[in-house]
Image (cartoon, rainbow, N blue to C red; front, side):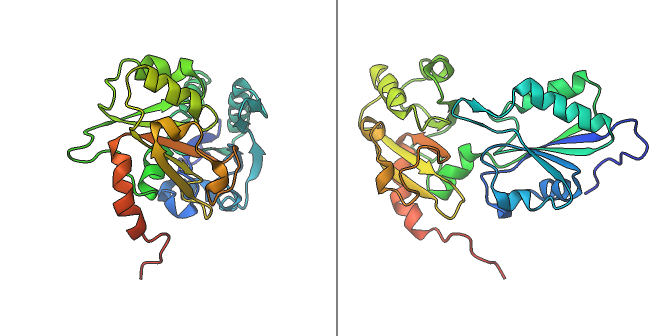
Length: 264
């Protein structure tokens, strides 16, 4: 569990760390190690305070982006990492989920490589898998789905090139960053041959104490009411959409899942 020492280097070191879906218990051991050693943490918007508290000696700098509101440009994030590393600091770029799953971690890795800065990538548990799992939805299930597709739902231009080439119902569709545009997504899929009765789910705040889930049909997805969810009618809540026959399995699995128990 050793992070490369900066004592013999002309520059510091950057760790691109996946924070997972938010629960500190779901961090990897390596992610925890890098946080405890960090001099500087650059964190995303959805990283909870409990995770930041695991870096007690580090300066923390918020670099989040929410619904088009950017605290700093992507190029600015690159510059912060490079500058701090060149000053000999251990930098943690803390990203929700996994750094390389719709998180622009690849861009940051390329920027670090181009600048000659030593870095590593610490995988994280992506909400694309974690959110369905915690809601009792298997993204693959024998006889229902042999595969799954993960897309960004922030705009039709992001998901259309993928879903338009997918046979309706051929795989489970997992959509990240698609809560606000869920109505447009549902209409797009139905217009391209998806059965309006296809099971659909919206999982909010996965792994957090206020986790909640809605299940219904694809036709109903656009009007899925936040107000009926325990998480409250908050469109800023992190959410994952799951579309496919596997959603129907949740009714049998979810009631039996025991959340966050201590194992002796």
